[in-house]
Length: 251
Image 1: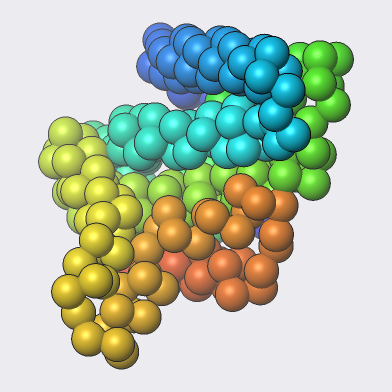
Image 2: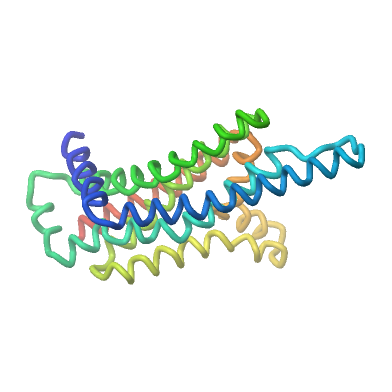
């Protein structure tokens, strides 16, 4: 455990000793902030229109601000995650320092988990910085904190899955760009896999929908924590880490 935490701390520190972490955080917060302002402005405008027309059912913060905002955050993370994970093991391979790690009194699983925690920790910092937006809404319109909790819990599981997939591809090549492209391609594939469900048969339709990365986030976005969704993300993350461990052992 100590060796795992040491590797995680070393890699996490390396992110912040270079411009990469600051650039990624700045871009992410800039995009999410711009989306939040636009979604909230649209919500206020819609509320005003409903009030002027004396209509009974008004737009809610959850449906018109929170869910679209977290949906957009997932899309942005789809592009950001490969840049965070591409260097975790690919750089070690390129610099031939992975051999030093393997010859040290470290188990491959400790190396894998340390690298995973570093990438996962950075994504958590990025996502955690967006807590300012629900706090702003709390002072303005009292949002549904059950939905907020569900959205952030879903984001945690998605971040873990993204990092595990990226770490696997980073373990397979010494070229960071190749690792990033393969990670993005894999994530995008599992994002879009449910698109073919309507053309598949009843059985395959269920399989494709179940494999969808973003499909399992919908319940979290409604404030519903379903064990099926939790097991899906944990299984996906666990399998990717297991494959990464095998890849490191074979190095």
